[in-house]
Length: 177
Image (tube, rainbow, N blue to C red):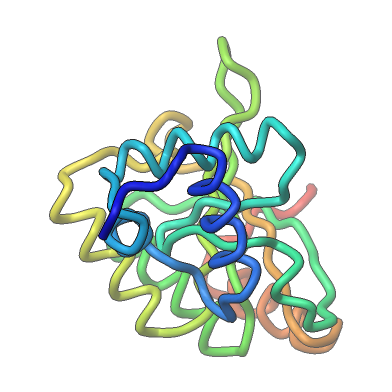
């Protein structure tokens, strides 16, 4: 592909993301725009700085406004100590039709640290677990002895309540005492 000017490239990048109905991985964007993945990362940062609502997730980049399905959200505090607990927790949410939007931890120096997950299917969970294992990296929850916070969303409160009940039954949900 012929190289294009930076401003034109960012305009095209934004157009691709706005027109996509699913997240687009950085390497695909790089290939389509004829640049390196690092250039895409920089372009996304510049677009975000200009106020564009671009989200980076483990599935790729997307414009938040593209997913206009009405959902309800809740925040839960969870704890698990191992990889089995991680997979089981995520699978529990998606098996009931929920979506794990993000994960957050409270760090003593940095305050809140968060990561976008956007996990909504069993396949997404498997890909996330595979990536975690392949990259041999630490989970955010490892910084806090397994304690972490998720934003989860579903089509209605009933589904959210079922998810919370099952997580509580499995011992993952931290309840107020």
